[in-house]
Length: 410
Image (tube, rainbow, N blue to C red; front, side, top):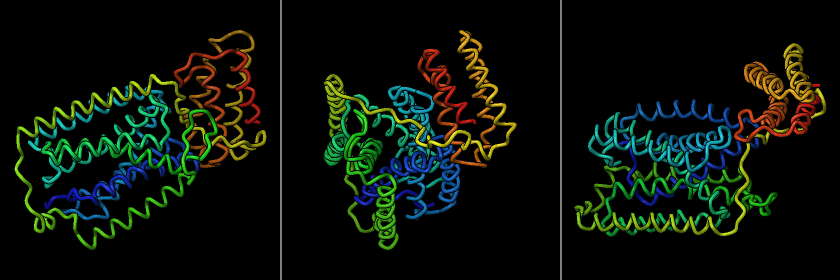
């Protein structure tokens, strides 16, 4: 095969940042604005990723449209995986960052041991391309985790947060021009484009005035408009590259001067500068974290909490299913009121299990109704500490949320 990855020109970085912005805004729009839900959105994009990757792997050379379509889908998918760990499984962002860092190191290690190169200029076999896309997926997940962790540590707004990855990418570019290892420079910059693009997306989409303390603020374009703008820019750039073929490796090599051989002394000096840059970044984050600030409010997968009249949400559901749910909710409520926390917790857990088991049959009947009940169900589970990291709340709070659920169930 010819090289399956485009030449790293300015167009490569422009379109890569555009893709990362779409990964943030488009995932949020489908999950929150359409009420599809975080997990369901992840399943959808995982399936789409498998399809577009299969198409990409079947090609024998680099073709702009399928390649960048795969990058867009990977950006959304990697973002969703990290969001599920954070928002649904309550995994701390520092743990996600550490896990994805180790996973990326493993991918690079196996790739190197098998192929003896990590250069994207030699992606000319199926194994190398497979390693490449796996590494890209992990970099998006890692970039999402580290970017969100930075916001959590510092309380910076998305607009201000753009400056950190932008400054680091600029420093890496200068060190690369000085003589740093090009493969290491590439992958470091590649990871940093994810928080850069995500912060740009958040800045454009976030409202101008924070609704709650610590919420991000921006230009209030909304996630849909932001996604539409950047998808249009991506399409225009891809069309330009398709016509000019300026990013095809073979074309680029025929019209440009061969790269200068590496200088081991300069590489070692640049490597030391990378280490100093990492230490300085850690010091900056530690300083920002120690300053008084309000961190961003945690994102929740409950944007679909549509307020509906009592019984309206379950109107299209089979009565027998609704009765079974009401029975368990009533049992939990009675046990809570009677001072039987063990029985109340067990009934709430059975309620959760029944609701999850019936999702595939109930959700297609009424998406709006299902998401409304699901949001209230999550509030009930939170009061018992089920599927949430918090300890059980007071019986009064448990009774309140169970009563609201029973009202919604009619």
